[in-house]
Length: 149
Image 1 (spheres, rainbow, N blue to C red):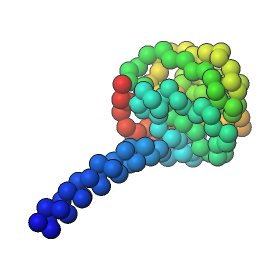
Image 2 (image 1 turned 180 degrees about the vertical axis):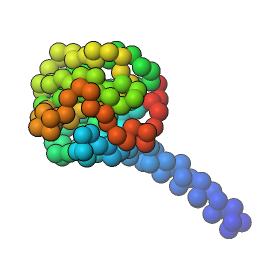
Image 3 (image 1 turned 120 degrees about the horizontal axis):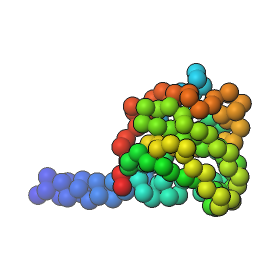
């Protein structure tokens, strides 16, 4: 009887805690041109749709890595995003295709110039201040999860 009740309590706690575990932001450590950064993972439809919207602050070496379900042309905008950001579109091998500066709250779409697998958003001056340009390789992408449609 006690063992049965403990199993039921454990099972119920597991169901209660699992959404909290799923809600935690996944973060990956990446490096570009010797410059380390931490990127929150946006690999689901919901996390990709929300992105960095409504964020008032972002630590200096932190950004968001968008992982797309297939290699294709993608575009990003800044709807409801108060931070000035730059986005690097990245191919499946981790090579930066192009970097675009984006203004807060803008609905102007910024697109990849070739089919991309990833997009990395950072503070607007982050890439330029480190002389990171198209052609640089992002190290650490092998540690990211696959996209979920």
